[in-house]
Length: 117
Length: 110
Image (cartoon, rainbow over all chains, first blue to last red; front, top):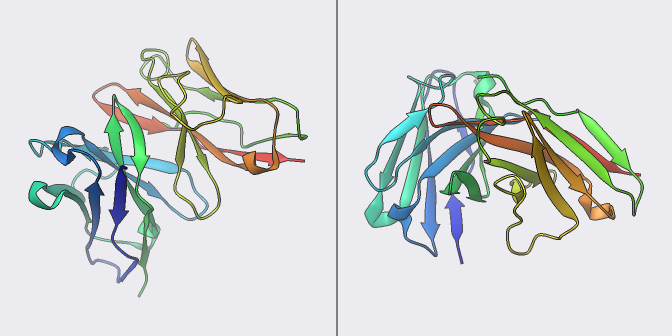
């Protein structure tokens, strides 16, 4: 069955970067784009962008453009999200979600990133 | 891009039906039949309940249904059960290959 398993919780200082991984199994990794979504505590879901896992092309939300980078390792069936210049407002749970037909169909379990000095 | 507009909260008694609205614009909800709905219990990842406006993924109860009219999509939950109590988010594909979520609606089963 389809599984998306994300890396564990992180604590970072303001100004640092964080890299979250999302390991896929149960399907052809390169065949489906991967989205990334942020959810701050008690807040709504926010779409951050997506990556074409086949050719590596990316599209970022304007809100995160310039601060976020999506990459992938097809040999490891893993997608990565790196967010830089962290600030306290970036404390959130980050989710990866596999696309099917322009729907965020399957979701990872989420990774909590805490930004604190 | 602005979030889609959802009511902050809705409530209903067991066995009743409720409807959650999701209002967007002609750049997102109104232009594409690509609205999805997610259920999220506290501390859990979102779960897809409806996609492409009205389709249910395998395993989702037929008590959940979706529709759209103009720039507004709706999620109806019939025969409310205690386990339906959760946050619900709509999401729409939008122009320039982007996606936008709603602000979320807290469903309380009285």
